[in-house]
Image (cartoon, rainbow, N blue to C red; front, side):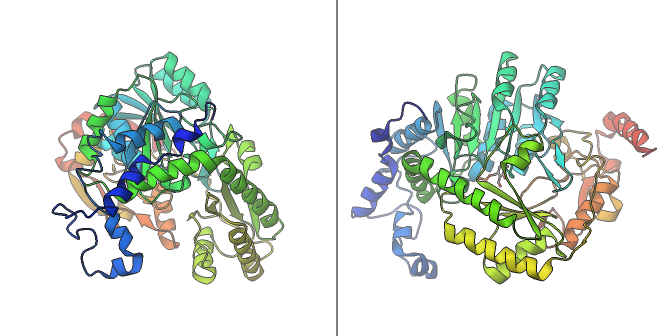
Length: 509
Ligand SMILES: Cc1ncc(COP(=O)(O)O)c(C=O)c1O
């Protein structure tokens, strides 16, 4: 936040070049073939001609994201400065691509990376692509809300001590529900041991623009961070940024990873939206984020007056063990209602046209952001009052699932399981078999099981439970699951001992 250079950050080099390109009488013979909207198209009629005019490839005039030397370079430099980074790479396939690139750029096959098990599926996908060996640590689990928070810092430190050869640690900054850990302490500890720190800032891209809240991954010294500008920074969906600080990871290593996963046809709309969102964040971010936080605090106070709901913010999460909290997240717990969180989420949209970010069994989550208004908050509060009137029942008892271990045991690397021979079995019959897939409810996209982990009765029941709700369960098959076919698996003998030890360990449960 210090050393502000407002004059420089007022510039939008990419957006300016795009405006210029569109205003000139270009005769297009390149793709996209709609040639600046020169087609009859219902979507164009709906969204407006300018969107199509701006959707160009323009190898001459607008630079090349895969080999930037002109306006993209300048726009990325401004982004890096705004985010306190040494370098910024625009992402046009979301933070998911940034997370995969961070892992690909830093971890070779079999190298260890310490990962909180409640990571997003893109991290697991990064492990499949790179072949890195995850050392999973468990997050703290809130059994009342049935959500996972951050791992304890001690658990990260123990994992580092036990795996001094780890190449990197992966951190979520903040979690979907806003919990933040003592990242500075962790970064220092990891760096003293030569270990890289990679941050998933999908939900924290605004941190660097609010000096009264948690600091950003770049300010705290992380080596790389992938941040979703489209989530909390005001750019278009899918546009994010990968940030690099220091010289532990090179420009070359990151570019090489992007060459593997990036499209060769990046969207000009997304890039321009990044350029202008960065300017807005830099110039007005502080004021808008404080407004959002005030709205969130107001909402908490008002919702807590409604019998049927408990709204949670910083106080709750710090009591649960979080080091700090992102107050733009508003977590609403159901209390004595005869519906679950998924049904509340559905009622809010279907009856009140209020779109929440996500639901879990006992909570719904609202993102209060740059675009939130007092009117939106009032609508939510009024809807919740009416829903409580219809659904509050004194003495409703929610089943609480006090899972022994919310995450199953991993037997082989995600990549090994991904490439192992496939057997498709009914969900009821997969206990004690190794998963080849990630299964999750989406959002939030935190897998219940990932490739390489063993199906337990508990996980099977949780998947069945979720399938009975309005939650969207993502899996490879509708009713079946994909597991490793032990009969044809050439690595079975190699892993047989681990499997037998596991079966022995669960015998007396
Ligand atoms: C914690 C977390 N990390 C990463 C991602 C991926 O971000 P994106 O949607 O920008 O690809 C998400 C998306 O929801 C997320 O919740």
